[in-house]
Image (cartoon, rainbow, N blue to C red; front, side):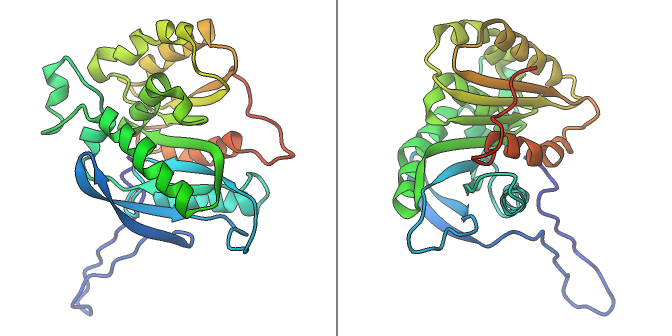
Length: 279
């Protein structure tokens, strides 16, 4: 999650009895709560609809699911990037669905065999349950409430990027587009990377897009490069992928720097070129 995705500034002043809170602008959107069954809790969902959506009749739109998708997380800047790109004609219209966190480290991590990993939170290893919530509860609700088509994408950074990559391997047909920035592939002693070639050889991916990137991080960039090497060696037919190593960026800056272009590449205008192939 990008820590600076919602700027909250508390301004102390002798002239003001209460602090002034300045929040990052976010395009017009709807927010609602939904009850999840597993685990039993309330989830907060934020939804941006593109220009023209409010017409009585119209097309069905692709859906981009944003992890860390709360109003104090990454939803504001992703929705703003998408809105700007659509209005500039640089991206085809999509809905943006932000999933606000409840227990982030539980939901974004899979099982681990290493005690050191389990120290990051009281509960970890809940990614399969979180993925089931998205697939079986959230996505059907979005299809019911909004005018959406079959094309879907998911975007995340850091532990959320780990979840994106894990989902790509565990349930590749759940999304059409996977965007993972600086994924925490160190989790479970690089297990996703170590098993990548055998999973890729097994196939079952179909026509998918995977956009992978990393910043200047000793515990993420090497693993990301090894995953890219596995893709380069045995990428299955139908998979469009790209790896963008960015040693000029930091963990705290990669999301906002790269996501505008990655989103345009993932959902180009109908008349635009397809996503660029792997380097």
